[in-house]
Image (cartoon, rainbow, N blue to C red):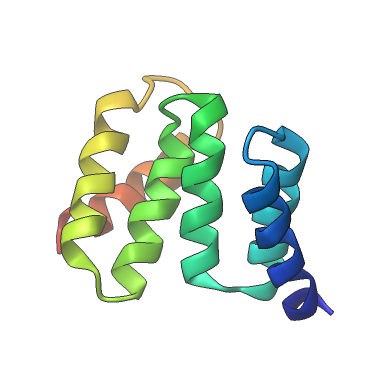
Length: 104
């Protein structure tokens, strides 16, 4: 069911790129389907509204790394490091993921 919803969610975002709700549904569908490429696209789309967001950027970096796209992973890691706040929920978790990407 998740994999079936993903193309519909992606199409909805394409038809209404300024609709935040569609963007959130797309990200959720991509997560449930465990589709790394769509998760990257969905998270990048969400960044349009959130602005620089360390957890989203770290997730994007990690996903790129899992796909073997090391240059893209490093780029996202640099962007994440630049906006990483001194305090945030689960900061240690996010920093560990970021450092794993940076070590590649």
